Length: 371
Picture: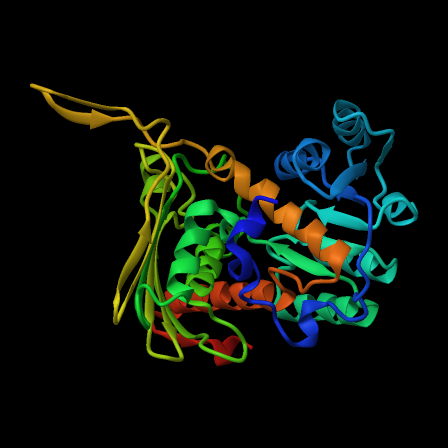
């Protein structure tokens, strides 16, 4: 399996508390895990295609979407007979052991709790829910059911970022002091994408919050984010005559050890999908740059130039999306801990909430203030 090549780095945050949802899963299973996909939108289509064609140890068994025709179209595309507008039909199917929750964000918690009650293992796209209280309710349901629960932070499975984590864990950078992450989209989301202000943090930066934690090996019984300071502006939207939704932001995370992470985000980078990370420490530095369309370089009298970088997240993280599901299926089959736990999902939302409050109040906000 591709993701297994880095070994322990995949499961560095195994969440030893009950939030990992690994209770009672100590039997090794044989055969592919039957998986149902709930949500036939863009990311649901990615997961369905990977389950149908790329993920070792799992197979697509059914698709559900409130738009029944969308579910049918996606299921038919991948040769699956079960499609429905009611996700409970997937939960009632005995051939389905696990579900991928890729429905609308405000439905995640409801679906997770229903799946847990049905005894299905759950892979849930970020965020688990929109409030910490709702997330806690879902994680308690997961713990009671003893199912495997994994959150969809796919950047942990990107080969370059995974390699950075492996090298940092091996001590190549010494003790981490600074983390720098740049994450810039090639274009902003369509009009009407947001329903409230400061959505950049729970929607976009949340991936970078998790990546910062992952790269330094943060965990509940070790070093962890304790404080957030953030600033944000509406620069891209203002130029487009938008509604003032912040699209440009810088976040500073302070860890309990004193290590500091800086994250810069923009909704529009005219040159492509800009994804970089660096860990600097007492013994050196480890970094990962952008992935280009190709490695060809032209050098002549006019200068030196190369290919453009990949221009869309589905292209940049294509392997990561497949590998995170492969890790999920392997954990279901072997009873291993979740590689991305409920705790990981919860604290990323807490950091996003703290960042929102920091912008509103123009001050650093401790995570203890937001729960």
